[in-house]
Amino acid sequence: MVSHFIFDKHAQTTGASYVPSEELGVAVNQAELAGGGLELKGILHSHPGGMNHPSTTDLASFESYLVSNLHLDDLAVVICTFAREALRSNEIQLGDLRYSLFRAFRTGSGTALLRAEKPRVLPVEGLQRVLVDVLGADWSASETEAMVTDGTGALLFQLEKEERPQAIVVVPESYPGMAPVVYIERDTGATTTVALPWSWGMSFDARVNEYAHALSAAFQHRDSALRPNLQLGTVQLPEMPRQPPSGSVSPQPSVTVAGQPDLKWPYRSFRELLRPALESVMDRNGRAATRRLLARSQGILDSQIRTERVLILGCGSVGSTAASLLARAGVGNFILIDPERVARENVGRSIYEVRDVGRFKVNALHAALKRINPSVSVTVIDRDFQDLSAPWLQSVVESATVVFGAADDHKAMCRLSHFSYRMGTPGVFVGIYSRAKGGEIIVSLPPNQVCYSCAVRTRVGLEPETGDLGAREVDYGTGRLVAEPGLYADVSTVSSFAAKILLAVTPSLPEESALSTDFRRPISASGGTFSLVGVSPGFAFFGEPGALGSAPNQLAFQSIWMRPYRYDDCTTCGTSPSGLHDSAEPALDVLRALVPGE
Image 1 (cartoon, one colour):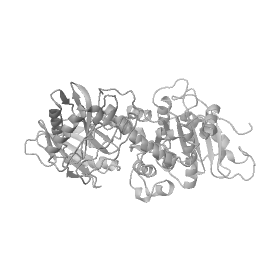
Image 2 (cartoon, helix red, strand yellow):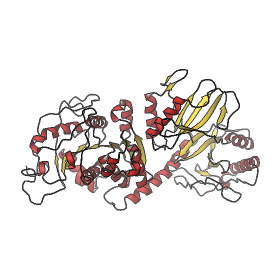
Image 3 (tube, rainbow, N blue to C red):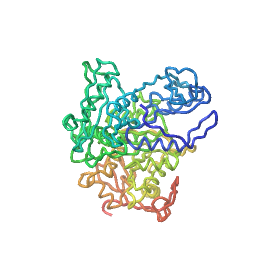
Image 4 (cartoon, rainbow, N blue to C red):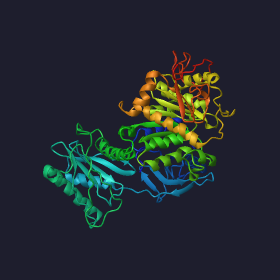
């Protein structure tokens, strides 16, 4: 069901072409991030004359979009024309405009496969007319609205008496097979449902007429005729069957308002009544999933972890591993950003499987997270981070509660750091050194601690003291780190530690949590936000005569936490922060040997 339309008022159009605007992309992104389960499903555009089917250019565009969004099985396509010939089975007429409906499927050949789609029209206007006629001349029905919750759609309208709302009628997508559900205000002020007959043994007209008279009787005997089994502040929403069960009377699903004790009639919109109830059901499912995930970590994590929204930049070895660990820890919302596809060589050093090869990493990771927790909410962005406009990027980062940087592009990491730091969003940034012998974990806790860019500059200055950290080769053309050999066991060790640190800095973590006591508070108090991690003996600081000196039996895992400098000229956290920047220039200042005992 299509429930929302976003008009592209900034589009580039001619008499024969339409090019979507960047503003439309921002608006769609904001709508998807706002919750409610919205997802872009297709595009509606007009054609000149009577051309009531997609053009060759349209089909190529649909294929490109579907290939870029592998989580979508198909794309809804609606063509609007002023055609005058007889209606086809896939068309509906609204006033002077004709809407032709199609579904587009990816083929892998550069052109999408098109199939005409017959629309299913719910005869709601007839229901409204009969209800108003039976209820009386002082009654009226509002215009319908669409609502989709957890994949199930419905049309809603309000019944009003002398312009005062009296009830809300929900028409399920299985109507007229299934009965409409009526939510009515009792004289006590509570809201509940009405038990009304829906007899399949009658003709449709007789069935609706019986239903309308039963509703009229319910209004006349409001207190006695209404079922008292529901009270304000509770929710009962059984799954609505797609097909009528055997028998003659339709079951009546029950819903009341949850968490809205001050809700008063009339409502500005009947979504104000139903949305809290439906969201409460989804929230209840999320809480149940979180409880199961936290069954073995009680006392360490809090159930509020499900409310966190983690933005992960880079879904390769580090990002995919951390994401799976965070989902298992109960994190309920993710934003995944990565423009690359899964390659065969990725399978040996990430959570991806052979079946994921060729898919965008964000889509494959989305599916993996859903297998861990079906109630998890995931937003995928399969574009290069550097190509995201500032307004779009701002809307994405603003929606996150914490960020996790795991990209192999230094400029992209600095850009994420800049936006998240300026918005006050905590973050963890991870880097793996040559041959995965070690890595770095940088914690960003604005505004009191330094940003990622300053920490990187500090690390560059440390190298004379630490020896070669194994700086990885950079691709001259892309500016990205070149992939090189390394054990996934080593990569996953650093990634797991980074995921644990991210859990420690999530805003919902209780102060009394062990993660807060062991990590967040010491890191915040000391300013030691830069961790050098070794997973091979003698790596960097950990070799003789380094931090551990000649202590025997030192293999791995090892880490040391240091306090990086805040550079005055830093455009993110310095004395004169400025606008967006893309890189941090290295400095030769050295933060020396912050080791135990010194």
